[in-house]
Amino acid sequence: RLHPDVVKTLELERHGVTIERGDFVPSVALSKDGPLVLHGAYGEVLTGASPSEQAAWKQLRAQLLRYAGVLKPFLSRRPPDLGNMSLAEMTGLGRTALALKRLGKEDMRDFLRVLLMNVYDLLDEQLSDDPLKGLLAFDATLGSHLGPRSPTSLLGLYYR
Image (tube, rainbow, N blue to C red; front, side, top):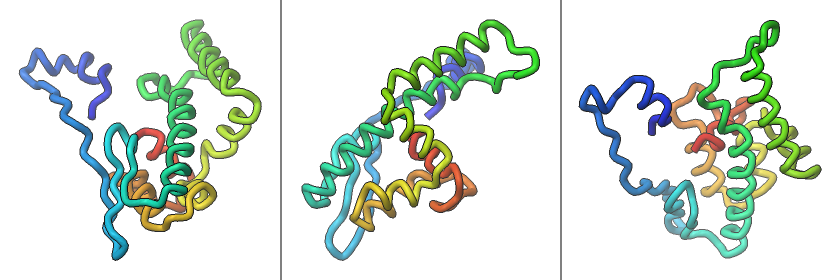
């Protein structure tokens, strides 16, 4: 997936490059107990897990999506120049601070707690199914030079 701003900036369509978005490819973990499959827009539906684990994943997924919404604007911004910050940069940071405040007191604290956390610790806190934790940790670190216990490896899961 390419960020829409990248497609626009590079004028990919003008150069004959078209990005076709098909259905989301499911993520699958195989085990002796049967496959675990995350279907849809990053795990909208989880099959192959116990009902309690499906409920825990649904809750964790909702939390990750809320927190990813706060971080999303940073995907297409340059890091701010703290010494010579423009009004536009200050406004953007202010909007992010407001989005963080809108999470509420408990979610804001939790967001700040897990922001730089590793994916292993968060999954270990929230889930009990080892194959599911392995699948999510693999997805979070795929394509990076990080392991599941590396600081900031949770950011990969936010991005997905």
